[in-house]
Length: 579
Image 1: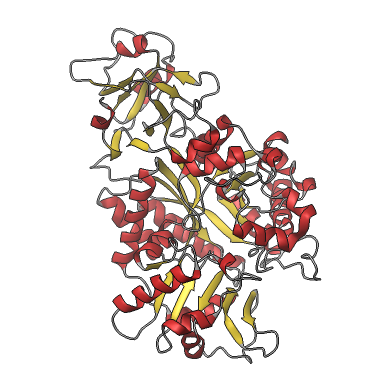
Image 2: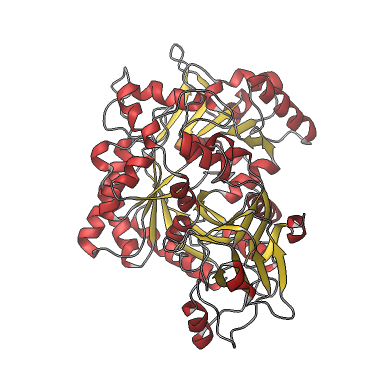
């Protein structure tokens, strides 16, 4: 998904491709073998290839990996014009992927009024006041990134804090795609009062004594203020993608799965058009796969629009053959669907789409080769997603659509083996699997017994399942090194707290695979990227410390020195590697 003129390597076909793929990483090349454009040598190269996980050097030609092996073997690939770069023993890895990102939402969050740097309510007051002051006119100020755990006891945001900042213009802030924080002026302009009924699959947070709205809008209730939020321009959308690409490249990421592309009824999408524009100017240095968001308010008839959108994306040189289903909400607001009631209540949350509708949609998509991707937080939502896949399997058999379920804060033990049995990939956000404020809200809602099944990554692997990691950025940091550390330790970076479910920790090798080859797998790109092997795209990173030689609690501090995408530096430069 990149400018063919600017960076895209010439594809290898026919006899040339067969020759390169047949060359063993551990054998000397034949005399007539082509010379490399670039050789990276004298390094510790972790390939993520099970049969040959370690090497010393790699040769690159036309943006692809020509050979992998020892220094002596790869030296034979040197030609008159080959550039040779000494890694001086540094660790070289395949570039990371992200199996669940929101590049447009995240980029827009930082372009508007971002609260992500705030740690306290006073921080939010300062940031929002600055945003209001620099935003001309009397229109809405919109932003995102607030932490619901700063609103005790139930994580419900309060309008009074925003009212102190402005009472004459609407202030609207989004947290994680499931909750809005609004001021009194926004409620007034949207005509939301104590008499306004909750919409289907949504909640207007209210004062229990008076019934008056308090400033929180959950799930579909967020749409009640849609008309107040100024839509982004085409330039805004393109700028958001470009910002996100640069940020992800700086973290060593060259592959992402855009987990919810918005589109309009009739089969058009400004998001797809924005991706195309960024690609055309050579700025989409990222293997990109997109999910089209399923509209829970519509039925199976939307399939026509989805097929049209996918065809449009393909015609533009983009890939949009996934569909994202939002089955439930989140645990702190008790909108996640649970098998048993929340602690101390009779409420269990509810699925936002019925199993019958979900299974019908997944089966219809499966028959057309589309990948289902489910948002499921509660254990009942996870079970519904697995049940939908099971129904599809019974109808269509084991097809290669590679279904994936994201988040899964809680998975009932009975359902954990089903991931491997059904061929469903578990997409976790590893940075969340630790003791921190939002997690404490979660554990308070579900109680101590179910808290033992939070993010059971180790159990999924032990029962034969597959993991792929994604940050859900901008809800959480996109930095894979932070995620890897928590995946290994179940402790937040820099904290000295007890690990959260230490039995569910994974190994470094497992975490690296979940950030590389298995992201490529869910993106249907595992023959193209995700590991260091002859014939694959030269998507590589060099880092400043060896993850295999340092304590796990130091991994989060690792920095990327160079990121290569299709053999070309897109972050840092090869000159940085010289001593």
